[in-house]
Length: 435
Ligand code: SF4
Ligand code: SF4
Picture 1: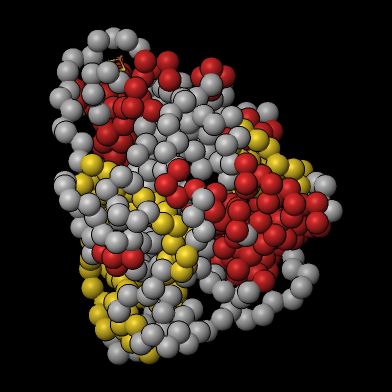
Picture 2: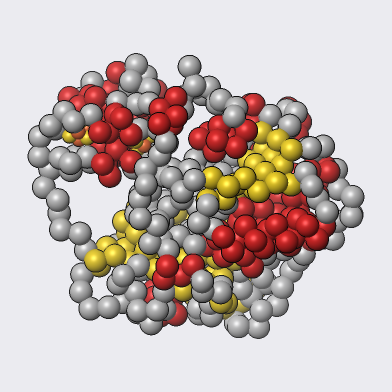
């Protein structure tokens, strides 16, 4: 059975709330005096620290090298001096961080120039050396997807749908870097011998569609097609998008690579362009700083390692009142409490909302909305009950690990039951039982 059968019914229509920043050109954020580079800003093993306190570094200096298995490199985004290596609170919990004091000289190390006609091995090595991870929010080391050793690729799907409300970083990336995106897609198509390439965008992204089409027309690359999706949530999820764009089902437990599909977020694609054509490792990204509580919402080009407090200053600070600070969008994002936390490679959006009154949880009224709206056909209330009863070993029977953390069930529940929280807690317990 496909895990996306429920999606046939269509997704959620939720307010996009992107007006505050969608038409704002990305501007370069100033660099702060101190930057914090977590060695654990991706899925998998943390990077191994490669510098010592007192070392001088440049933009692009390797601060942490990838560990065995799933891991990636971390590079400095400023020039200056390493002043501390310490444990700090970060978006993923706690991590060893290399602290660099910026000398504001912006001296830079670049990666070695590479040959014009790359083959797949050199290409995935470059992605690995540049420390590229999925910039859509997942933080998965990208080189693993592009390592052709063990699989054939038939399709490339570039995910530009950015279905989270408020986020506009992918949208701005497509509007402002359409030519770079098309150029690197052409290179990937050649290297991996892919005839069918799609850029998936939502139907409200008119300017991005126009710019991308212009870039495609200019290069005469007919095999790159723009696939316009309806504005439904969660359109950005890998398996759902593959089904919508290609009509291919992803079965339980499969990844896109298993079915011959190479899939990358559009901002990740731009990072690959930077690494291949400009020899630059991933040290910057576009971040949308927005929400009703921020004085001047902006799309900022931000150096990785910049503390949130610095970006708040860049955006005029917060309005008076109590605030919920969210890393990501309102559906899948996570509340954080400390503005000293540095932004990392998968920070797409910093959202500042009026503090939500604690919504009182009431008894389930058995309306089945959570079940009807789950795009992967789970029974969220049953999983939640199972967690609360402590029957953790029932997780596999309820397929709770197939949850894509879209937050739809929590969003639609009239009884305010924190269903997603319970599901994630159950999955964590189940994992602990396995180890
Ligand atoms: S968060 Fe809820 S709605 Fe989304 S996949 Fe998981 S169980 Fe289904
Ligand atoms: S949506 Fe909420 S109230 Fe309705 S069945 Fe699910 S848990 Fe119960």
